[in-house]
Image 1: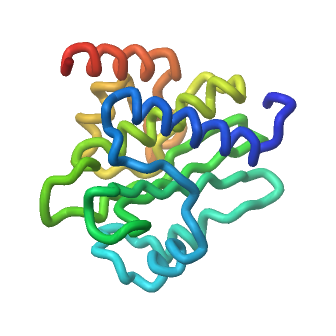
Image 2: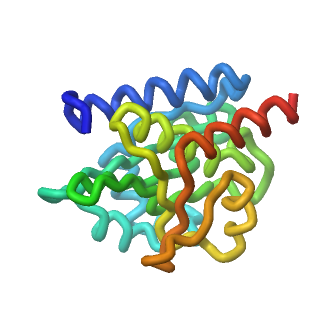
Length: 186
C-alpha cells in the first residue's frame, strides 16, 4: 500500500474517475461519495433497487483490515438535483492486499439515461485507479450476478480458483479492454 491514507486514495480515485467520465463525454454523470442521506434511503428501501442494499450497508463496514468505498452516481438530466441514481460499494482488504467491487446498481430502470450501461464500467474505472495508486495487480468482483458474467469476461475476468464467489482480472487487462472498447465505440 502506498504512503497516503485510504481516504486520500478514495478522494483521488473519485476525482480521477470523474475526469475520465467527463473526458468520455458523459458530462451529465456526477461521481461522488455516497452521503448519509443516500445510505438512509438505500437502507429504508426507498429506491427501486433489485439488490439488498440494507444488508450491504450493514455488512460492508470499516474494520481494522477493511476500508470501504461507497460511491454515488447521479445523472443531472434525470429527476431532481442531487437524487441518487446508482451506487457502488467497494472493499479494500489491506491484510490480503485485495480490492473488490462488492455491489453496484443503476436505480433508473424504467427508461434510458446517461447511466444506462455505464455503472459497471465506472466501477471498473474507479477500481483500476485505486489499484494503480495502491500497487495492487488485480480487481475482484464479489458475488457477480450470473447474467453479468459474460460482460465481465469481455474485460478479462475469470473465476477465482480458490473462491468461486469471486471473479478477478489483472488491472492491465481491464485497462486494455476499456481502452479497446472506447476506441471501437468512437
